[in-house]
Length: 124
Image 1 (cartoon, rainbow, N blue to C red):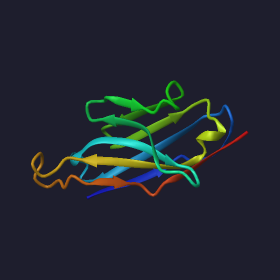
Image 2 (image 1 turned 180 degrees about the horizontal axis):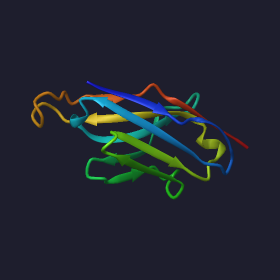
Image 3 (image 1 turned 60 degrees about the vertical axis):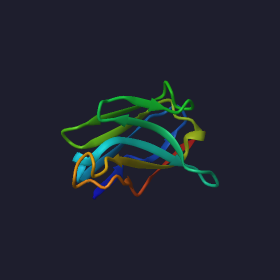
Image 4 (image 1 turned 90 degrees about the vertical axis):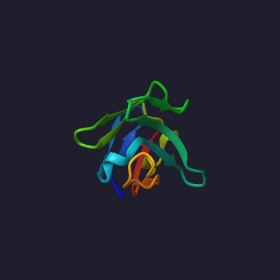
């Protein structure tokens, strides 16, 4: 199993910055991709950014040029640097980890894991 713990959310004014962190523990050797999703009230959870073990990144169009995802493999931690924040970025942000299955590594299950979420509020 993989456990994910997020931190770094909070309240910020529009135009400000925040950095989210997601620390993974447990069977971290099973993780091949990590990412951030967000969910605002009354909306579906949406993908924000992902990063693979090969350090390939993907960003939603709405955050390109403003958000940067990175990872520190030594600390099993993924970061989301959020700059030029807008009120529409307000949401609960969730960390996600995708893992390989047992055909790749015997002890791995191929599950997706989620953190508990951290609130980001951007005031206008």
